[in-house]
Length: 277
Image 1 (tube, rainbow, N blue to C red):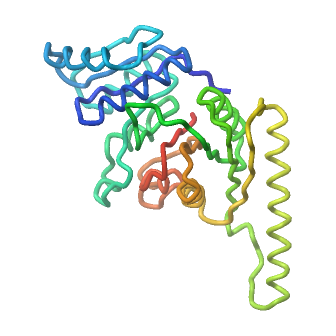
Image 2 (cartoon, helix red, strand yellow; image 1 turned 180 degrees about the vertical axis):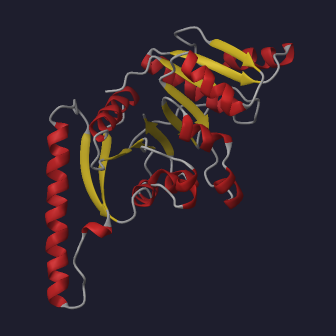
Image 3 (cartoon, rainbow, N blue to C red; image 1 turned 90 degrees about the vertical axis):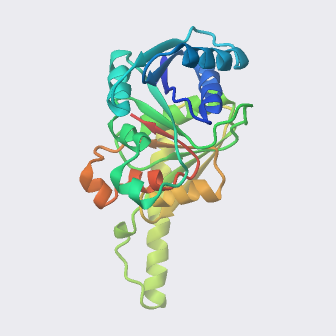
């Protein structure tokens, strides 16, 4: 299970800074983690004063804030700082729906999500006053990293006092090797789907034996469809407060042309998303 000891937030003096900062401070306190704030640009008395005013209004940090002021390219500075500071979690504000141009060219948040050496939390609805987390959706995709991702989701649910977790098992339609063209083949396809759902449920239940799930309502949900798109759509229609997924093995140029499962989620974020690395 991933432990969070150090959290990094990019300090851009934008309209969302206050809400992003307040959310991050609350999370830092929940995990008893040190918070590192990075501003890409020149240090000035005006910016220092503005930041201090926000900190005076914010919840009290349990551990002191470390502020880094550095000029350079935003992606390079944040990636370099994340490595140097041994950051466990990078928190980024994100646009809920990006324009097609940004989808192919890549915004700062998208590039950092692909290249960060640590887990990344994308916030689309940061709030100054805390909004309780009531429902977490986590990917139960068959992968060697899934058990750690599910453990992280349950650890987070305990910290956030979230009592409801849904584990979504995405099953690709290509695994269903039955062509439906009459009642017999439809029945055969239905039985095959039921068999696959039982297989996936058994796999997830086996993982849950090693995870502390006390006081949490757990649901498993099998979905047939395109990976990434299916779980994102499910999280959206179920109005989940947080979607937790494993970081993919690769997210390069080819994935932007032939979208990876993560790309479907990033192109239209259904809710706040935690990408576990």
